[in-house]
Image 1: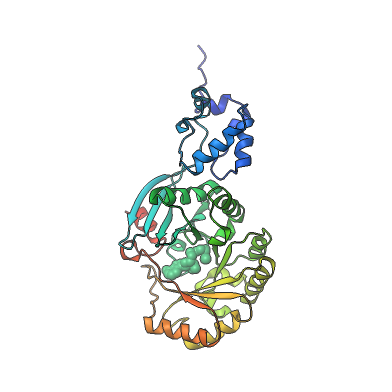
Image 2: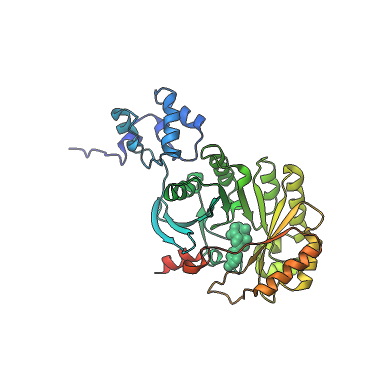
Length: 358
Ligand code: SAH
């Protein structure tokens, strides 16, 4: 008797090609409506599907009880695209770190940061990171792959569901370099905005700067905040901290930031890690003010979060304040970002490193 071929997922293998779909998460209401109508379902099923995915956190199409049993059985294997919670850890200040397991088994990190008024999610854009910045825990672990759009959106739904509270802000400051994954990041931004209802102005894309990609982002005409990881006040110093800076002259990077401001009308944030004795001296502040002064920008100082692989030092509070003062004297808009959630699991990227090693 000839062996019978049993497909892994009968519904996908035997049904119309429209069923062999990529994950549904990240698709807009129009796309979901198109998807349901392609299967002979009425249009309103698209709206129901959208609600169940984005508001009721459905993980499987078989959970959607408003759909007929017969249709649910047919589509049960089409993936929504939710990842699995692998590990969750709460800091005393209420910050929650999540390790999420993707369908291929890779682990990524997302963080929920609550305040009275806001719930911010720090999302990853890649599994690992290829930039290898010297002070960054993620960079020390190497790079595996880009995240798909649904894997980015999933992080936000996970946090929103877990907190039982609407996410108000997103920062692309988790693992990875978002502008090496621009296509999926831009799609995710649109979905976070249109499908989950997060204001574009409340979404920050943080980049170390990839030649041509800041301009490309500007041309998407989104209203997101661009944050550029400068971390140094001149090219030579930047190259010692950020290997990719060798191929991207400081002045070219600043020029692209100017263009971002001109095209979008949004100011740019410059992130600047403070490393004691290395880039936090008064002359660095003077040089930085010259570089970023004169156009719509803001400097966000980040006192270094120690990681075990390198021995940079975090400056004292007095040193930090002195640096702030030098910038303010030169009329640079400046703020200091103290990382939260450090008490228990240390800096971003380190939780994953610890857990993968254990
Ligand atoms: N690839 C993006 C997102 C990285 S993480 C980027 O480079 O902007 C977001 C911010 O955290 C970046 O500014 C990054 O340089 C900073 N960062 C990384 N490691 C850090 C550490 N140990 N201490 C303080 N900030 C750190």
